[in-house]
Image (cartoon, rainbow, N blue to C red; front, side, top):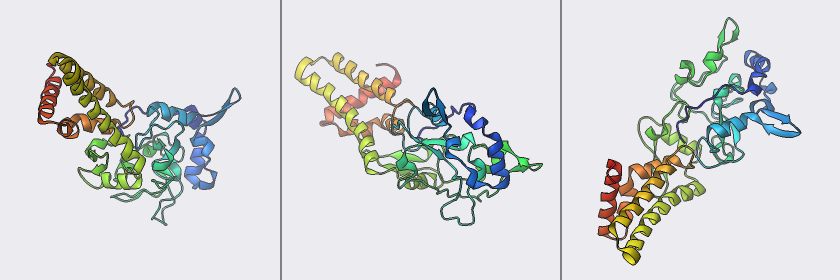
Length: 293
């Protein structure tokens, strides 16, 4: 999960549904909510496309907004559930947000529907239960994800549109997501989206393993082939540069990569074979960070 500040203008397919959206919101017509609208389903030149999903894929670099795994065909997920809230039988769901652009995120099915978030939406404050209105009209400003009314709910589920996930989630060397920081957001998000399922643990741990192996390969080349300290330094610099590249938002599991970069000694250097390798890797890493390598 990477904080995303790239929310674009509302897709045309959602704008075209304004009248239907306002009718649903003002009259609580949940049965009129259509997946084809919030997905932006259109047939263009004989090809069926989902324009809202395409926009979300571009915004999130083809990744699930929650787990950061690559997802070619993500589900269009409602951050606040549109028809019901699990565990709150008196809550009608956030039907007035069914077509709200800032309430939509791209999610893999595992984070969303298959053992994932589903219709859960616990809050520390008080749930909003009714359509925000001004003069009996839908107050669209109060439907935005960063409106004070919605922020006052104090959701436990992290939202990459408004939260910095690094404040609430860290990772260990085994790729396990661990809650940190203030409040319960990290713990609830990890649990709701099942962020420690087996495939995610494997893929995140593999990043650590691969970069440790890259460092070890440089030492192997040094001892077995060239024994040129400058070649070793240059090789390690290449590894550090590749780690920087993997921290970019465009990369899968960039948050994990950033934890590795920040905790290089713990994740990589201290796991090397010999004290000499550990100390040398730490020293060269410091030079790189200080900009002198």
